[in-house]
Image (cartoon, rainbow, N blue to C red; front, top):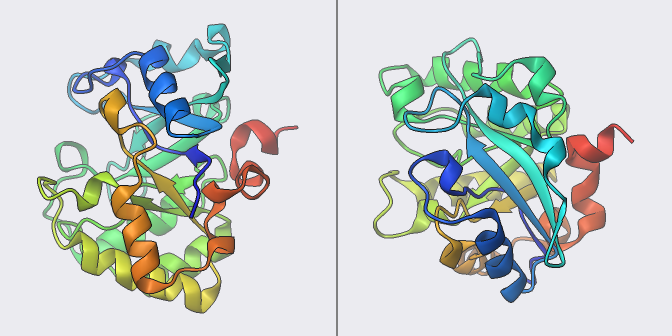
Length: 241
């Protein structure tokens, strides 16, 4: 598959990432991408930027060296009730919102029933576009419920390249992604691809993603990042037009 967009990446504003906006955009362009989402970690992640960072995106030009930037956030799912760490009014102004579970914010002591409840409640929020790295075995849950709810709510499920790195701290990712993709094929649920890059060298890097799509013969028409016409209807910045 040829990917034209990356819907999940981080600049140095996230605190534990290492490249600037221009560096990330240049790397994405070198890989042939037309669109790059910069989704900084929301305020409850240790070391990241504060609320005002996300309130000031109107000053950022959306074209950077020929790459269309999406200025957004990776919000933290905080509890089983689906609480996130940015206000609704802020999220609605962002180009894109990814919602993810992270150990410093959500913890790892919740039951599978609590985990899937958290995802379901988050997917009910119309300004949340993507569930980020739902492959992490540290947060077990029922994938069939996740996929069915994504279809009902129009939420994209992410195939995360960083999750499949050998050095990734996430567990059971390949098996979990294959389970999710099998259900997405069965229920015809679109997915998105995120590099989850924390350095410019990884912006638009889908080496592991491409391999797993080939392995399971996943249909290209269910991968929204292969065609901007498929992706745009899921983004807040186009929903509002």
